[in-house]
Image 1 (cartoon, rainbow, N blue to C red):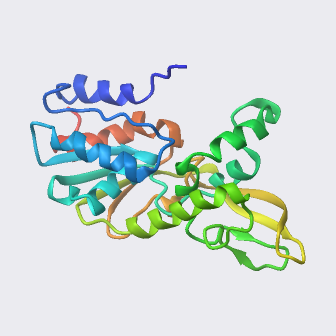
Image 2 (cartoon, rainbow, N blue to C red; image 1 turned 90 degrees about the vertical axis):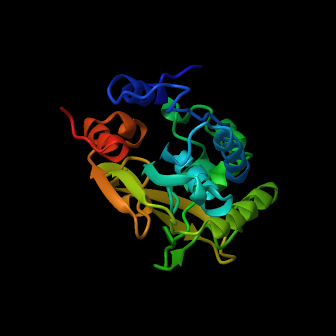
Length: 260
C-alpha cells in the first residue's frame, strides 16, 4: 500500500518556497513501529551526513518525538536552530489506550480488531505515545494513569511499557532550541476514558469520551510544549501539513516572507 502523504508538503517546499531536494531540503523516512530512540539515532546519522548545518527540522506526529529526542538526548541542539512540530503527542494521546485494549479503529464494524490489536501491541511506539497524565476515571471518580500502573496489560506487553516509561523520562517535556508547535483544534478527539474496575482493581470495562478539543487524534493540551511558540489551526491531524494556514506559517518560519 502506498500513500502520497508527506510528499505533498515536500512538493510545496520545492515548488512554492524554492527549496531543492538533495541540496537544501532533505526528507528522512523511518520505520514508525520501532523504538523512537533507535529512530532518533538513525536521524542523527542522517543529519551528520548533510552538507549544510545548522538546520531547521520540520516534523509531524510521531516524528515530533523523534526530533525532540535527537535534539535533547543525542546532541542535536548543536545542529538544529529551529524545530517546527506539527500535531506532536508530547503528553501522549488517549486514543493509544483504545488501540492497545481493543485495536485501532481503521476498518468498518471493528473488522480484524483483535488481530490488529495483537499486532500493534508488539510495536514500541504504541506505548511511547500513551498519555503521561491521568486520562482515565474509574466508577468511584478516582483518576487513573495508564503509565503508572501496568495491571491493564498482558505479561508480554509489560517490557515494552517499561521501555516507554524510560523513553518518556529521558525525553522530558521541555525544548532547548527555538520551537513552534502547530496543532489542530475543534475536532472530535478522544479525551477521557471511563473505567469500571473490579475489587482487585482490574479494568473490566471502559468507555471512551470525546470532546472537540484536538485534531481528531491528539488533544490540544498534549500538542503544546512549555516555552514554545504555538500556532493553532482548525484542522485534522492527518492533513495538518497541507493546510493553507500551516503553509503560511511554514513560509514565515523557513524563509521569513509572507505569501506574495
